[in-house]
Length: 362
Image (cartoon, rainbow, N blue to C red; front, side):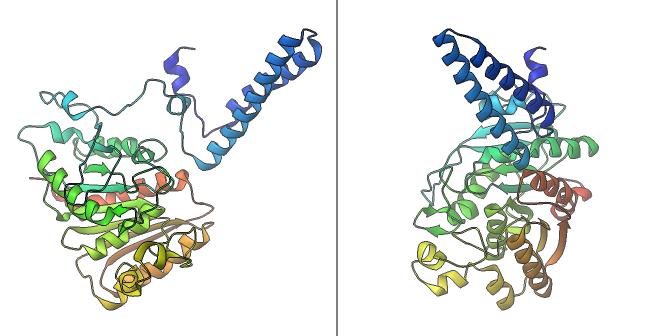
């Protein structure tokens, strides 16, 4: 089996991989007991421990659904992000291209990791159409690459583009936390001006660099977990910049913990200001304003208690506030990449409609 074949071995259908690991582990254990040379026994013992740990990691990954294949997990050649300067603008590719680049925080001074950007085949056409944009937000802990790894975003977008003449949204996957375990909740707080970065710096940079539709009706924000609640809050607070949100397993709003309970949220994120908290709380915004031009998609697993409660409450309040809403509850699904891959694929046709792609692009 060559490297490319190994790279495609599934890690989500984990039984074949686990059987191989268990057989190898059993062989090592037998050799440890049968070999008399001390150094050899120590060596096989170390290998046995490593195999046992690897077996646990494979099972955890299979439960969470982050790495789809061995290639993703160990970095074998695959669909790596290119740089903007490396793109060949003279030809239209058969599939979309993912690039990695830094989106500077010119106004916010927000310190970020490189973003991932999906450019559909249509972006390479001449004359270049002005395409709509989706900001696709990760959670915490997490990174922009989560959407191109466990989220399978490029695969989903390529399938859509293939069925629609190479046209799909430009999808920007920015950093929202400045680090793997950061938790800004997309507000301007002690960890940096994440809200300003996402609502001003990112749209301004993307519009000028990729010649997209301007912020507004043709821009959407979607996200998983923390990114899902961020999507709702950002769109409600900046309806002139974004007209659509998609919330996959988000909580009721900005939260420092893993539940809808406030905990120390008001103190940690808003300097103990209840006014500032309310101005970022979707439930408060939806019951104090109307949003007749907006659209909102909620998708959540029925085994994910707090996000499920949040989705049901916010969908009802959003509909009452004039938002065009959809609520999808997935039976048996939990808080993992299996659900988030499905949610993005489920919502993409609706997002495309909201962004005007069904009517064509200019």
